[in-house]
Image 1 (tube, one colour):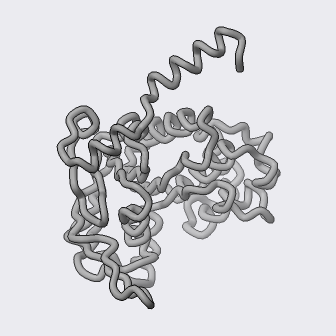
Image 2 (tube, helix red, strand yellow; image 1 turned 90 degrees about the vertical axis):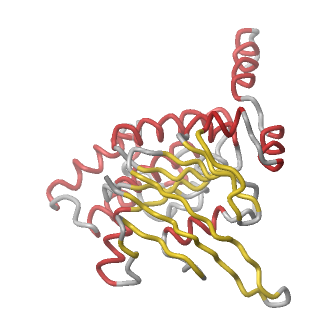
Length: 270
């Protein structure tokens, strides 16, 4: 069981012309294996700052991040081992893959860097990972990212994140750049992988509807503070904070969307 603790973290940026901006204010949560936490908030609420701190692209002004009770190393082999345990799926599948390299290269690279399997097993492991994200290896391995659809690219990005066999995954708005028609498929894939691999997942989103679909627990972030948290159903069905109530009122009803989509399809409109 892997446990990641985000303890009383405050992050302050010094911005020329504006002074100090507090992006996070005493934020705390614990993410464990086999658990999905939905982190919900509008743009500028601090969600991406949390992702950057978890991936060590930023450091807290105050507070700390602990992995299994120990502070995250600042460099060297310890930091590399931490980054092997925690991987990230980025928001934009069009920008997160290098257009000059094949799909094989994207997935093979972390396998080589982290020495996940012997060299003579690299091809088999790339194929296994592509199959895990429901892509046909022979159809995509030698292609470039621009030759794939957005949904296929995001599946490749997920396969790349899984290559190092992490125990924790940060998914930063992983479906917001995709067509509505394929978002549910990618979310269902992530949910299946989380369950089958025993991953701990921090699912970052602005959409309460998908957070409820995908998460065990939801935290609502507003102006750098956690204003509400609880089980997914409690937060969605019985929100207490006015900000959460506003988010809920602005979120589409996914069941209504799919009922409407089915009705139009049956009526001959596609």
